[in-house]
Image (cartoon, rainbow, N blue to C red):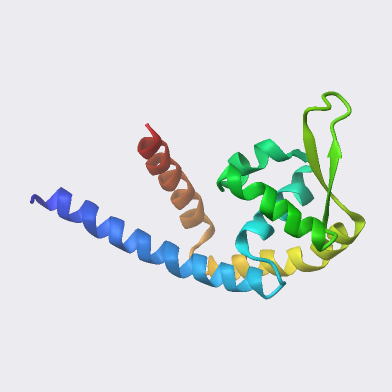
Length: 144
């Protein structure tokens, strides 16, 4: 194994461990609000982007489409989301945030954003920009 291959393996291990550590802490924060990470991701998407076709939510939050119905059911049960038919195509069902869901997110999202910012605190503004560029580059390459 040459030096570049060794560095690639080392980078993979360090990247994986860093991701796992950061994700674990973010997950704990989400759970402190009574949501699992998938529920949080779906609710956050609709909170920021508005109503979404249920069939497209999985792509946007990187979860299996087979899980979406279950997650939407749970969020509907908590009265954070509601299903409604599209005005333009009755075959499409949309998920939309309720007033209760919006009030909930208005309360918790600023805290979550501050928590995530704290996790990124060791990095300078320039390091964050550089890391974003490098991670996107690596991700795009891996997707090819």
